[in-house]
Amino acid sequence: MKYLIIGAGAAAISAAESIRSVDKAGSITMLSAESVIPYGKPLISYLLSEKLSENKMFYRPQSFYKRLNIDIKLGSEVSKIDTKRKIVTTRQNKKYGYEKLLIASGSVPFVPPIGDLAKQKNAFTFLTYGDMKKIKAAVNKESNVVIAGAGLVGLKAAEGLYGKVKNITVIDLADRIMASVLDEEPAKIIQNHIESKGISFKFGVSIKSVRGKKITLSNGKDLPCDILVIAVGVRPGIAFLEGSGVKVEKGIVVDKNMQTSVKSVYAAGDCALSTDMLSKQKKVMALWPNAVLQGQVAGLNMADVKSEAADALSMNAISFFGMQVMSAGIQEPKAHYLKNTKNALSRLKVNKDILEGFTLINNVARAGIYTDLIKNKTSLSALTYDIKIKDIALGVYPFETRRKKLFGGGAQ
Image (cartoon, helix red, strand yellow):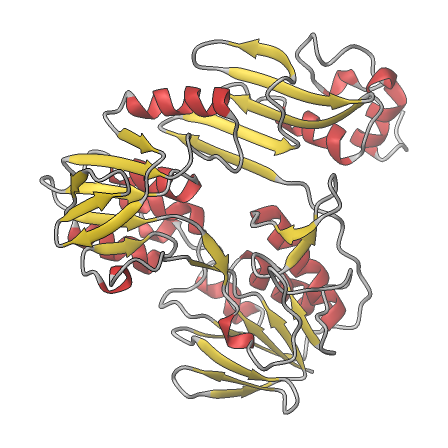
């Protein structure tokens, strides 16, 4: 069997491992648009801040690809897929045939259509190793940096640049940081913590124009800007699918087997739609664990081993300057508090005896238990004590449940 994988992130690697666990002889070719072997993209802010060395960023060692006989083609950006002839063409005009194809092309940054913003020499995105290298080479101790976007990517860019530049200002059209994930109270706790490092925020504004080293905001005010980091959002990297016959909505449409609308073509990761386990909505859920699981399922089905993808739980786990933040499921400002102080928050969303979501700041030790309760839709009244009152551990479960979770139900 001739397998071809577009992309080299978590979903792609997971799929390749699954294929090879079943098919030892088939050829696996992986096309990566980047110049380095697959790495953990969440690590680029730590590379920028020099808290992590480059040899620590790789997702798998070089020997992994040799051992699994994976032919990884670096610097291979896909431009077109011909699903009738089963040929993939790259921008370098190389052509690759396939029998089974996986699209795991991930996300690309969205650059707002503001004048010649995409061509500005001092404007950068922050999503890849290459982006990080360009920013690192461009900044110095006298740089005034403006980051457009107060989401996860923008805030991690600010953390990575901290101490390397003169000023950092983060702007966002929303009224708070991480507005798509957090409501006002947890957002304010995190904002205050980041502001204590000297980083400033301006909300309710966007970029009106960029002229050299000056930005004019939508409110008419100007900001000095030697370096602009664009972090206003991402989109599935699937422009090359035009004319392929692969059905696309907000992402690539897949079935439970991760197969697309075209036979023998699969998709996984940040470019594919998932089903939210709570809302049952189909949407892109750009989550590392979800990408790994989707890649696993896609790889097995490509190797003719039937497997189905489970619905995904929306989750975020991150730290900002040492402040740990986790959220999952449905968020609700009026949810029950376990703990709420100046620098910490624990909040649960309970609906009809079922835990549906949580937000945790600087108190994440029990996040795994909360996540398990959400995924299994566990009846809270069946637990040994009220999770809304006490901290929880495995002992929250009745004895038989604990035994099953620890020993699969077979040990005494």
